[in-house]
Image 1 (tube, rainbow, N blue to C red):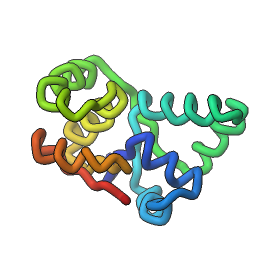
Image 2 (image 1 turned 180 degrees about the vertical axis):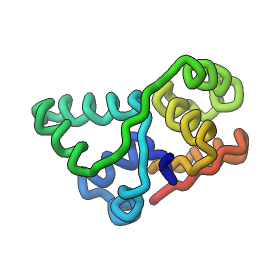
Image 3 (image 1 turned 90 degrees about the vertical axis):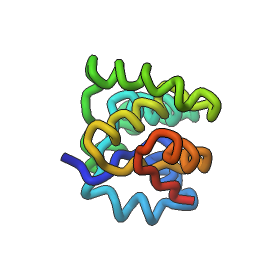
Length: 129
């Protein structure tokens, strides 16, 4: 089991050399990510002009555990909508949060609104910038 779950924004901060990069770098040996967030990262980097194979290679170099998105998580993602809809979270955001809740670990993001989400849901959240 991983010690932290990365949101796509956290991994993108690392890959793109954005503020918070060093915090994510320190977490990588113990990090996991939902397959949903993995798809988001690939999509965003390819949309910015990266080749899919190079993008996947970059992510694999970070050695993050990619965890399957299963039926139980899908149900939890759906149940989080009531507690999170006022914060404008996406399905990917809720996928990250549900994985962190399932594994009782911290969800790591760059999205400041998640501090309020953590209070509303009881999920441990760390905003890296």
